[in-house]
Amino acid sequence: EINRPLSDNPEAVSSELPTLSENVLPRQELSVADIVRANRESIVVIKTSAGAIGSGFFISREGYIVTNKHVLPNNSQAQIKTTSGKMFNVLQVVREDLDGDLVIASTDAPPQESKPVNINAGLPESGEKIIVIGSPLGLEQTVSDGIVSAVRQNQKSVNFIQITAPVSPGNSG
Image (cartoon, rainbow, N blue to C red; front, top):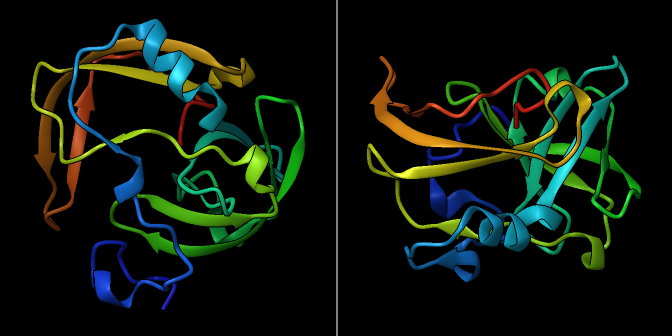
């Protein structure tokens, strides 16, 4: 059940998992600083027991995060670090999409530390400005920007967003 793609059957997703509808924002022009201010507390650093570092973001006040599957391979033990500097455990991967390299994982972060990221509805268009907030090379809360070069589908019809913003090891997630 855990290997079912995230987009496979929306009705089957547990009622315990968050809905994104309350976090969806209408599309509007914001400055880079506005976007960073609105979302920085949603971004976490992920540190695995194997020493890997990645990034992720909260999608609910219940402590659920999204990151890349390669950041949390094989249910490896990991912790997250919030912008307040507090560390919390990643409890388990609750959904994964191997084709999309994505996971939703539960953590023991309390609601006051779990600020969901603001999410725009739908896929971006080519040419739209994007912001990347992460921890490249372990440098936390680093911001870079760019544009959407293209939205492409692979052989399994998974949408991928090609961007021009620099992404270094540690930004994954």
